[in-house]
Image (tube, rainbow, N blue to C red; front, top):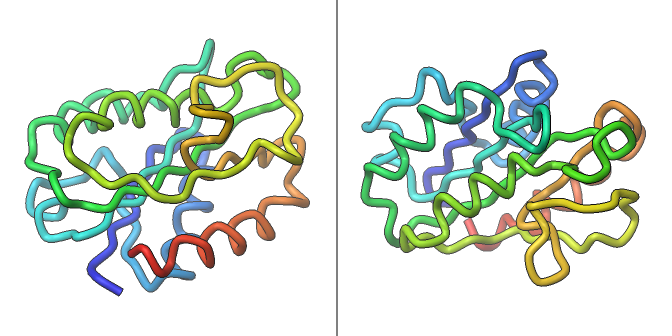
Length: 164
């Protein structure tokens, strides 16, 4: 597998824990987006980007600057996978919307997105992270569906390994 960097934004620690699990499964390094450097991004062939979702489908705070950094760099040819944390019960109309914001910001940067996930098995009303009937990455609800998190991470990392 080529050099893979897992980048996360986390306010409560949940997204960080998930990023570290994903990184461990893939033999990658996990980095807080607040501490991300240009050199780290440039040295990586693959980026796995994860955010929690806040308010009405917004990014985790540190991702606003992080996205500006990523958009300023040449990402063409990099493989990108996304994961997002949300609350499908309290925020079912914006479930994992932050992941959709990252996708929208980077879709025209010449990256190869991998890791879309069918919406089957999820309960939510709407999400900016759903494109063509699938989540643009791994959607997780560690608040209401914590019992499904590890199995979803395992299935997703197994599915994307060959693309990394």
